[in-house]
Every structure is written in structure tokens, then in C-alpha cells.
Length: 253
Length: 190
Image (cartoon, rainbow over all chains, first blue to last red; front, side, top):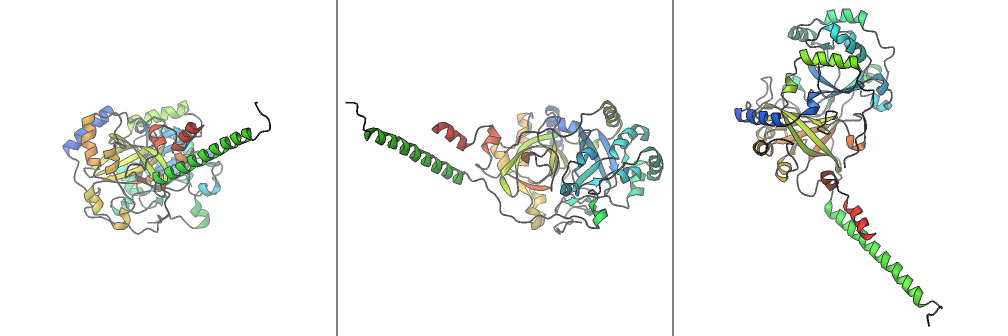
């Protein structure tokens, strides 16, 4: 793992390829169906595209908020995808967390499941100029429950043949056509793919920190003190006005 | 406190793009998405700052009887922003975790019993039965998009989030849309 966190590792019951736990009961399935029939689930219904990405055999389903911003639905690897135009607006320190897609697409590593290449090609011409950021929250390569911290995800080698066999595609063939048919982006922002320029990656850690609490007791004390101050101020002003009126040389007699 | 929703930057979807989306959505398998069967609504706060609270709409799928995984959006609308994820596990599974891992998880008992966590639109009987199970589970939540700061893109680092555990923690303005106690006092005095 890239993270310095060492709390991961398989928990009992893991190792069968699925998270540990009892199989879903019939009763639960009935409850799920009942909820699904009555609830709208609108944000989830926007997911429209299934892309196969070789980041530890990641499969990701994409939904588009705008053509300039997509988000993914793969719990464990939630990525975001933005156009180069939006990427340029990010501060440099934010850009370092993002990666380019040009190589993945041109090399055939980025593939679409079950969709003919000619249908997918217009979208690839847009995607080749985009930048992505994704976070690994579940190290499925260790077959454990989601544990440990979060890792910034990058492309991992070594899965091409397995992926191709499973999905009936040929990455070398995709590469051959895309080298000719998908134009290379004119420029890839050097702030992306940080590790390429600097030879170093990122880890993030969870550390203990002082927590800012919401305290109703302290808030009430502050409110009461403030009210008291205003009360005294108000009465002080009124009292002064009355005193000035009494001691005035002008008489009503 | 909830920040006003800002527009996601970018141009609207064009016709050609929409056609590709239609084609892919018809022929491709969406099995993991189609497993999502449940919408839960609750609130999260940042693990180091309880004053920053976010409305969280969870869309969840069962991996098995003891584990669910949820996508978290900032609203139930079609243009909702994907702001995080949550994993939910049974107490049995939680007890198997190393202590260092347990610290990243939160309970659901208070949220369910107080009514803060509920299932919008679901029949009462379905809610009661399923939330009774949820009340005994533990969650691990990570947010990627700090919408409460007004970010219109997912910027910065992932944030571990926590959930409410007792009365008095929830920002009243978030729950009911009322003014804060201090502004009410101002109104009363002046």
C-alpha cells in the first residue's frame, strides 16, 4: 500500500473473494425490493457508461454532471473526471493530485465494456483530453474488508491479459487503432501525473487532532452573557438620559 | 452548516455526447449499480470539526447480510453531487477489525433511534424493519467533495467523517432551516 497506514490486512472470513458475512437473507431481499419500488434513486440512475480501467482491475461506472465533470460509482475507487479547461482553473497544489488520461486511452488500457469501438470513439476523443482523480478506499487486492486509510490511485501494470480474457477484448488491437484514430492532446499539463516529473508519490495518513466540538452549553452561556451585556448597556443609556433630563437648567414650571 | 449549492462548472451536455451515453446505457452491464436499492438520509460531520455538518444522501447496496456499500450524494436530485462513500457492517464484523481500524468507524444507534436517519419515501413497515438492523451496524465514511465550504469541484484530500451520537449535536439550522439562537436573540432585543 502506498499509505503509511499498516492497519490493513485480511480479517477472519475473508479470502473467498467476497467480504466476510452471512449471505443476504430472503427477508432482506424483500425489504430491499420494497424500498427500491417506492424510492426514486435518481442520482444513481444517471450512471450511463461502464469503462474498464486497469487500476487493479478497476471497473468504473460513470455519470456525467456536465461533459466537463464526471464521477464514478465504484465504491473503493471513487474517481472524478474533468476536462482540461476545468483542470487549468485548479490551483497547482490541487493539480498534483490528478492524472492525465491520454496514455490510458491511446494504449488501449481504457476500454469500454460491450460497446463497439466505433460507437465509443467520439467519447474517447473527448476523454483523451481529460484529467482524473481517484481514491482507493478498499484494497481489494488483499481481499479484506475496507480497512486502512485512503490511497491516491494510479495505473498498475500486470493485469492486461486477465482483463482482456475476462471481457473478450484485445488491448493491443485497441492500441493499434487508437494510435491512428484518436488524436493526441496538444498538451498535457505537467502538474498532473506528479510522480512522473518528481519520482515521488503521495501517501496520506489519519492523525489524531484537536476536535472542534459543538457545545450547546457554552453557546448558551455566550448568549446569556451577550444578552446581559446588552441589557446593562440599554439600561445605562436610558438611565443617563433620565439623569440629563432632571439636571437640565430648563424648567417646565 | 449547509452551504448554498453552486453550479458545477462546465458546458451543458451536447447532443452527440448524449447519444453515446444512450447507446452505452442500453448495451452495457450495470449490475453493481442495479444492486443499489435503498436511499438513506442522514447527516455527517468532519471527524475533526463537529461544527461542519453535511446532509448525506446514501444510496446503498447489500454485499451480503452483514455488509452494505453506499454512494453518498448531497441531495436526492438527478444533478446531485457525489460527495463520498460509506461502508456499513454488522457488529459481528466490526468486532473482528483491528483496534486501529475501529477508530475510523462510527455507530448508527443514535441516528436511527432519534429519527435523524430515515429512508425517504419508503413504507413505514419497510423502514422499521430495515432501520432496526441499521441501528446495530457501524459505518466508515469518507467524503471527497467539501460542498459545505462551497467547493464547486472535489478539491483537496479525502476527509474521514463521523455521525451524530446524542441530542444537541445536530445544527438546528441544518435540520429545520431556522435561524441560530443568537440571531433570534437579536430579533427579540431589537
